[in-house]
Image 1 (cartoon, rainbow, N blue to C red):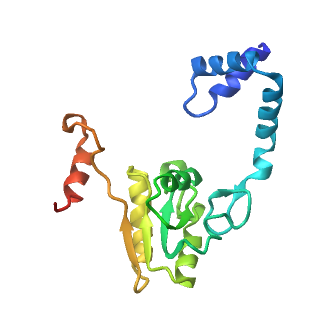
Image 2 (image 1 turned 90 degrees about the vertical axis):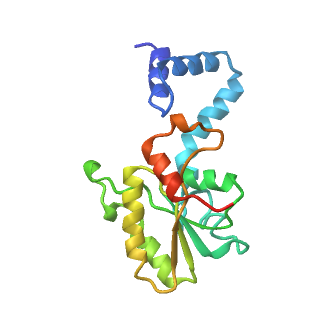
Length: 196
């Protein structure tokens, strides 16, 4: 196996990158400026040393606690629960949420051997019970595992007096056609309908 084949194979292990895309990346790197390549390689080599999970919310950060958890301007009474650290960046990019986050680190998936004990659910309960949290927004993905996890968390949190537990709405995407919507998406759209 040549150096090109080895690097192509390494790139193709990244999510969303097939063999053809990996080959294009390798060819781009071969033609790129050597100073840029050295900087890029150094960034990759030191990434895991520099970035770690926030001790409070579990999002990726260089400082602990992360900038979101340490920001006194954030709404401390609302926590948005997400599956993975990258979900925090996705929600932040919308500029629609000003509360805090809690990263579970996955979803309940019995077939993969992932139960509630492997997730950061106990830490969520501790945060809710020890603080001034008034609402928890569950923003797990609308999948079977995401729904199962959301229901499990909702049941645990329903025992806490004065706490509102909500779930992100899901349904038809803007610009989507009804004929291409699956049954589950249509069902959720009808259940989550709003008044004009």
